[in-house]
Amino acid sequence: MKKSKVKVAVIQAASVIMDQEASTEKAVVLTQQAGEQGANIVVFPEAFIPGYPRGLNFGTSIGSRSQAGRRDWLRYWENSIEVPSQETNKLGEAARKAGVYLVIGVIERDNEASGGTLYCSALFFGPDGELLGKHRKLKPTGSERIIWGEGDGSTLPVFATPYGKIGALICWENYMPLARTAMYEKGIQIYITPTADSRELWQSTIRHIAAEGRCFVLSSNQYVTKDMYPTDLACYEELSSSPDEMCSGGSAIVGPLGDYVVKPVYGQEDILITELNLNDIHASQFDFDVVGHYSRPDVFQLLVNEEKQKNKR
Image (tube, rainbow, N blue to C red; front, side, top):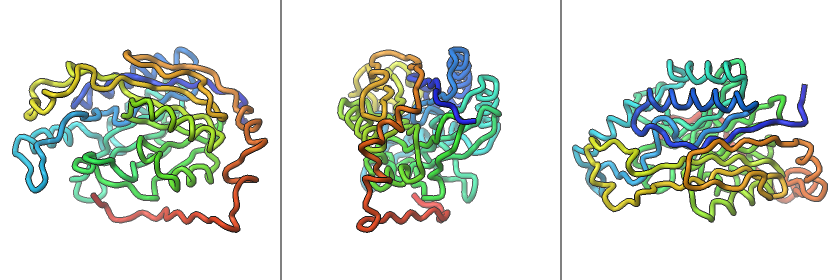
């Protein structure tokens, strides 16, 4: 039965950086806390397990890679997770115990070919604990391409739930207009944007998406300080010029007219929790429906290749 209201929780918290087991346990605890507050949907940031390695370049420069950087890369690879795996089972069990839909950013280790490629992925779990599916980031941004491969159109799911249709695009792939349009055409109503972007400009992005797609946008970012990094990284000195506050947060919840439901939170870990009225979506579509009465399919058409491609990086 479809519900008209849903309680959502957006987690703003840091990973236990480069520690898959501890990051997973932290996610389990925070999921339980959100469930105890009545949440039906719980959202975590980009790359929560085992972390977004902001400030590191893994000993790379154009034309060379250092041995120290390879050691840090190996550590990152070892602390990534396969899908499915024992770690995804733990996350699924956390979703089941809390009775929530869980969406969490992870670094996924390829288990379909060589095992040598990592993907920045978002995993979706149902309240029964089952892994519903995943989305792999289509285009890593800038130097992220050193460490992550590219997803393809086979992982662009939008899931029908009693609380509306949910899906996700990760961080700057939300600047890809056609990727957004693919989500809109699938009827997305709760649009999830795990991110590592704490800029004020990101707030304009998520507000635009909400107004453009006439959907709720749940944006989740980490709050990270430099002292959270393990000091035994082989390339720890790469952080020497980084500020003490590495990522200030900025998680927020936006309604389908582009207005904040929960304003962005900065400078701390937090759980942003609120109730959404899904009828607000239908009311907002009175004057604008980007893939309905405000579209021109006789002029513009979108072709999405959802066939699985060979692994690439």
